[in-house]
Length: 365
Image 1 (cartoon, rainbow, N blue to C red):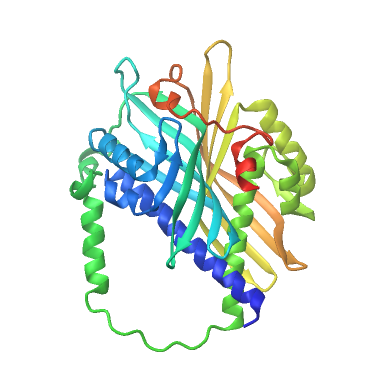
Image 2 (cartoon, rainbow, N blue to C red; image 1 turned 120 degrees about the vertical axis):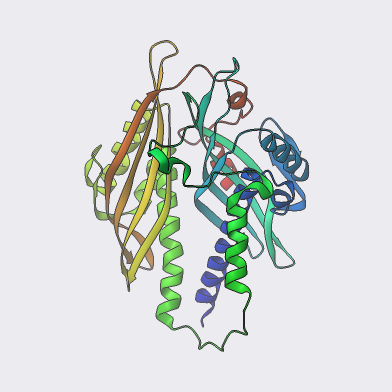
């Protein structure tokens, strides 16, 4: 195996380990498990959330205590752009949506979808990747009046388990049961043949395509025209509804649309799959976009859109880029944003911005 391939495979392994760590952090917060949260950080790690800046170990206790006394939350870490900056260090930008049914200042029920990003520095010590420092950036906070209610499915509304904290969470019990069933009779793994060059290439390419789609989200949300142009081949094609045409022209127009139309934008992609054949590939990425639109006075509108990106990629001169990108809209929800910012949102002072003043650019250098 040549050195370039070995380095690329090592990066894939690092990204996978870090993404598992990010998933564990979300589980720890939602289950109010201080130990699980703390395990995601090195002992000397620090955090900056705005409402708290200091040792990560203290934040773990603060989050677990706050969560245990409140309603169930859901922290969903979607795509991550993870960039190694050395053999044992990496930087990461992870898009995160957090659902919380937290009351407003006046006690009235509110459902919230808080869209933001983790800017993380990861280090590997004694072979284990953990967070060395985390900074949270708030992008789009959406707040709607009302409280959580089961879907209107009649008697079926009570046929699914609901989340809980700690051991009271049915998901933790189900996971433990699955682990026992899967690993109780574990045997020594049979010897494996060396992976084929094609398998190695597809493994590396899969991670490179995931990184490409993550970079797209930053380009749109930060209105970074130069970044977006670098992701599309010169003869690429885009159909997005907002603009249909050449990919390079799309980069210019979509940045103008976002700047002129939205206070802020947040594009989160998940459950991706890619089918790779040599230097050609296709893929589908599920996406949720959250934007806020200003109005007269305090009137603001929050828009959620769910859909899919259908992509064709090609690798030229060793670099994967979009050859085609098409957006398919599946659903959209538009509602007034309830009231002014209250304590929950005001406690997160570091805000995302359009353009080069966004915190990710200083962090990414």
